[in-house]
Amino acid sequence: MCATCGCGADGGTRVIDLRGEVPAAAHDHHDHDHGGGRHTHAPQPAAGTETLVLEERVLARNDALAERNRGWLEARGIIAVNLMSSPGSGKTTLLERTVRQLGTDTEVCVVEGDQETTFDADRIKAAGAPVLQINTGAGCHLDASMIRTALHTLAPASGVILIENVGNLVCPAMFDLGEDCRVLIMSVTEGADKPLKYPHIFASATLILLNKIDLLPYVDFDVARFERDVTVVNPAAQVLPVSAIRGDGLDAWRDWLIQRSRSISGRPVGPSPAVGG
Amino acid sequence: MHELAIAESVLETITARTGDRQVTEVRLEVGKLAGVSTDSLRFCFELAAAGTALEGAGLNIDEPPGRARCASCTEEFLLHDRILLCACGSSAVEVLAGDELRIISVEVSR
Image 1 (cartoon, one colour):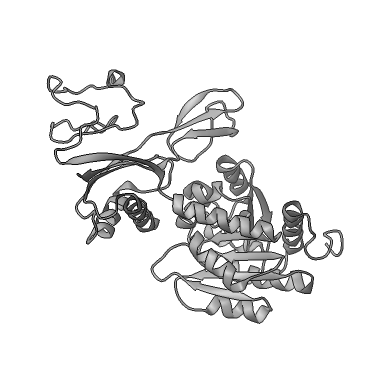
Image 2 (cartoon, helix red, strand yellow):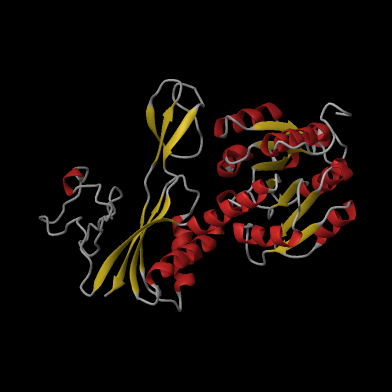
């Protein structure tokens, strides 16, 4: 098959370009024999069929639902954060600490996405936040429809919604949930090469929390290389080193959330960043 | 693995427009930077289409290449992956194309 336009060199396959923006004359890139011009690139539906031009984005339905979620959240001045990471990066520990840090000053609720079990939701509940567990079964990511259900079930009136996506550095990047921003949690035990190996998810993050920095003395993780590679795939992303276990950087993370919330809702969330920060 | 969800989304979007009419061919545009494995998508599409009006439909996938423009030197160049680095050394690179994930058209029985 011709790699440029996809037309079949064996003459058996037809390619029908329906966008009307690529005239046949533009196909001067071919270096294979077109068989005396017996095939054409013009639309030629097979006998008994007709062509319907759809021109729709594949994820249009998800994206439309995500926009509805976004509107629902904005109307209430709620900031929703889509937290993405590999399994075992420390997301749930970080969320437990975040829930306790925001304390009673802020309404915070959590949506937990996992394939199975309510382990994570149980931990968040114990930390004191309303939580909804979504088990995706075979699914590898959360989608906008799941978040719509979660929003209507939890029905928060204000504050922050922290959405813990399914642990996976690939699939969650594709699905808009209606969130305000994406935060990627990456632990130093995973290796500094991940930004270049999983560029899509790094490219979509507003903030990257580099977790487990208490383990830096024990692992071979080049922080400078990691930050440089993040810049290569996402020049706008900010990297914040934290240790969810030991507490390093968590005040800065809380302040970031508060600032983000203010810039979105115009309403303060939690205590002033200047206090106790 | 998200290719199954994408295949299902393709099916839903098409059947919302074509109803019960038999679909014999589907044409998609999946940019090289879209983060979708077309092999996996073909496999998942066949599975998802079984038992529907799209069962056995051909899947014709255009894969437009990634293109980018450097904000520093204004050079436009092909982008083979998500590594946003211009030959001039700048990473201030804007992706112009390659993110496409669209259903272009379908062939349906009359």
